Length: 75
Ligand SMILES: [Zn+2]
Image (cartoon, rainbow, N blue to C red):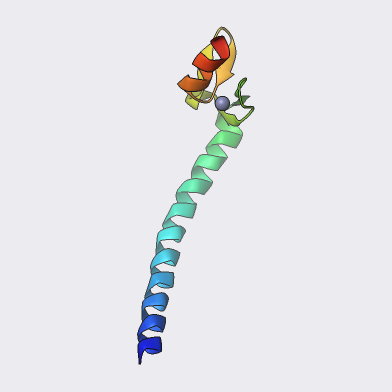
């Protein structure tokens, strides 16, 4: 009886995740296409991570992923 209940909850959880993910992947795909076509990717000088230019912080012609990395680099 307990196993049946666990399976039921697990099944409901999987369905919930699938529904949630299907909505999310559409958004992800759209933003990924936007990055490929419309936006340049830049590299953080401090840690080397790649991010869209619009999300980066530019300082003295160099790109950073976060304000902390910008401050760290300038020290
Ligand atoms: Zn960084």
